[in-house]
Structures are given as C-alpha cells and as structure tokens.
Length: 366
Image (cartoon, rainbow, N blue to C red; front, top):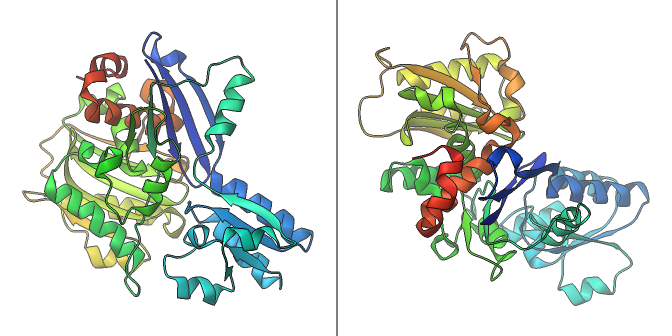
C-alpha cells in the first residue's frame, strides 16, 4: 500500500511516500519550500518588477505570502484577488478591503495586466512531477494530509481564540491525540483551509486529515525513547506555531499553544514547566500573543512520580538547545523533520482501520 503523507507548514512542506512493502526507513521523502513561501517569492518578484498581482486559487496558509503582499501594497502597487483566494488574508471581506486588496471574479482578473499567482496549500501535479523525475509512480492508495487551520472566526472574534476553542472542543469530546484526525466528511465547516486542502485530492484515493500539531506529537511518540516513558511532554516548535502537550500516551493532560516567533527560549522553558505543574494561566499565554492553555479534567500537578521525558521536535527546536528542561530531541524513525508525516500515517490507520495492519507495524505502533 502506497500512502502519500503531506505535512504543510509555514517554512516547509514535508512529504513522505509510505510503501507498506518496504521498511519505513526506505520511504521516499522531500522537505520542500511551503506553498506560502512559494507564493511569497512570486509576489516579491512582482513587487521588484513594479507589476500588479492577481491572486487566484483557494484559501491557503498565510504568514509569508501575507507579509509579502503587505509589502507589495505599501510599495504603492495594486493587488487583486478572487473572493476565495482573498480569504487567505482574512475571513472578513471588510478587512481584506481595508488591506487594499481589490476583490473580483476570476474572469475579471484574467483581463488585467497583472502577474497571475495561484494560492493553494497542495500542488499535487508538482509533487508528481518531482517523483516522475526519479521514475517513481504518482499513483497512490491513500492521502494523509495536514495543515494548521485557525478556522473561519466570526467577524470581531479573535482568530487565536477561535483556533483554541477548536482544540479545546476536540479534547473535551474525546481526550486522545488521534481524535483530531478526520475523514473528509467529518471536517467542521469552519475549518475552511483544511477543507480546501482535502478538496485538492478529492476523488483520487481515500484521504485523512490531521492538524499539524497533533500530527507532530503522534510522530514523536513513535520515537522509542519517547514512547518508553509513561509521561510524555511533547513540544513541537514549528516555524510559526509552538504547541506543547503533556501526555500519558495519546491521552492529553494539558496543552498550550503560542507563536514560536513571539517566544524567547526562557519563556518556552517557563511556560512548559508551569504547564506540567498546573499553574500556567490561559490569559498569560493569550495576552502575550499566544492562543491559550487548557487543562483536561483530572489532577494536573507534577508529582514527580512518573517516568517523564520532555521531547522536542520541529524546525525551531534549536531554541531549546542547552535548555534547563534537559530536552530530548525526538527523531522518530531517524528523521525529526518527518515527525508530522509519521503522525499523519498513524491518523490514516486510525480512521481507515481496514489498512491498519499494513501501516501500524511499520510505525512500531500497537
């Protein structure tokens, strides 16, 4: 069985082609620029050439492409977008107009003298072209895909809180990292970016979606050192978001989420220590430009009675190099950057149990 796992981040898109007939160490993999980085580069080229941009496609990850477009507009240049593509920059049409983006239908944009840039989180054609260059088939039996979706928050409501409301609701409904995994038909309407990502492969093969934060944690749990402990504190330091879980296996005791760029190494240490001790407050994280803190029902105090590991993964893990937390840098199956993809494969097996026997033994998961 061949499953294409794609973890769409802010800095990179991490791609793994799992083949159940081979050891997972032989799985083909690519760590490539993220779609938002690619779009940002194209916008900046248009800015340098003093050209207007016409943005088409669908809702996609912001960050770099958002910042590039702001610089483009500050340079006095024009930007146009279709209604769907414009939601990459804000779910509220009024906020999009305030940015200076002109929203128009695709056929109107086609008549403009502007550089046409397609926004999307997944370019399956490009991935297939890369594989084809190495004589690898682009036929897949399944897709395991993930991104971080803030969700379409109501006008006037914080997108950071809206995102955290979603995390809290999932854990309260079923306290397990795997509960974040969704079949296409199970995705809430408000997870518009996730739905667009799933639509990109719709009809091709069975598909499972999982948020990138839980995906990284599920991947880290496949590291032998991490899974051998009976209490795991897993901190994923992504290029944009930092998400920390205090776990007992896949069960969640507590969590906090923040923006990596807003945190110093000392803050990460402090927040993590106080989360595990049950004293970190939601308002403190939110008021420092983070998302929030959540404690699941039960005793959250750190009694020291458990065999604990503090595992760190993610491309910004260097922030905790030499930390007083004495972190373990998790390397599931020998590859830290593919932690999310390994977690996505676990999620695929969870939601597609008919394929579990082909996947879980390769991951070392029971």
